[in-house]
Length: 463
Ligand code: TRP
Image (tube, rainbow, N blue to C red):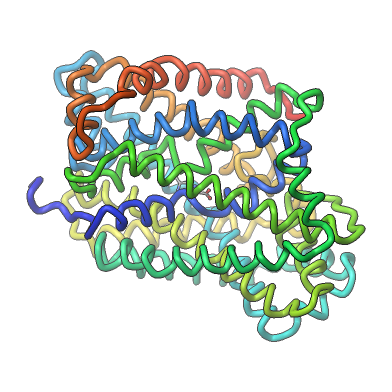
């Protein structure tokens, strides 16, 4: 069985696919708006530290679990837990991941569906008219959220695209999609960054992002940075584990993980540079920063020369970024059905994909117009009303951090040091930083995730 498992075509195939998973709405939407809300500078530094000390080591841990066993999230824990303390109970962690993948994909694809609507409207010119004033666009957006059919249509289209890629398999589907979409995504981003360098708000944006003011940093901001480092790197539910299970033994895990973290971070920062430059260029009053992407942005884009082109490019970029993420979410669930239930890929992907699409329709249909704006808060910590808000709260505050905690504990404390060292050195050579990595996985990771969980239990509010 192990011999038959699919593999990435090359080292870059893995890096592109895994970066595709990591780079998504979290980078283009969530990161800019939490950076904005937390006053930039110091928050960005805390975020970078969180990526380096918590995110990156746990990413390495997930990939190790996957490549060592060449199995899906549940299978990996079944194999590695065997004969160790806790034994088969560890499979529960994998199962939690599969459930999280199911839940996150079901609502992530609803938001991703909005980008399709915006692409169509940019091309047709309708967006240009709506974006004349912030108020008209705001009203449109509220009505759009309340329009069940349009919500459903976008969601189902996006799920169809996701299923179509995953059904083709690891090489012909996932890797090929990433190889095509990621360079385009990167190209569009660079274009937009070059464009905003000439806008008057650029230098203010750079100062906002990079000039730290630690007196403005709150405890809530630190926790938010930590939580986001998890979400943005696709950690805590076996996505990196699953992609790692298709990795060649000749590829270096630490180097690949570094590349993914650097790419993910670069793109998050670039998104901030683009958004803040154009927002600071105009005297725009950002009322609800969590919907910046869909309400404020078009207004400013259309004030600039070539607004229609900029908008089309931008929403295409967001759609592509979201697609490579939804692919990875579905692959976690599909690979579980393939390995553990013995289903063929086609049956697994179709059955699970359709089930997720149906389940996600609940979120699409419950987007109750303008009021639900407050619940749009990926990995937000408010327990909010509505199915969408509840699922998001459940997944981001419970499933992902708890999953991440157990992944770190399992890798750091249950697996033997020889096992993890052998896997890490395969394809890499002797490791200099092994001790540091192990220390971070055993202590820093669990402590950080523990802090997030405790803060959620105590109901710590941000800001
Ligand atoms: N990382 C993606 C983003 O930033 C979201 C995502 C995709 C994800 N797969 C995941 C998050 C797995 C957690 C787990 O948008």
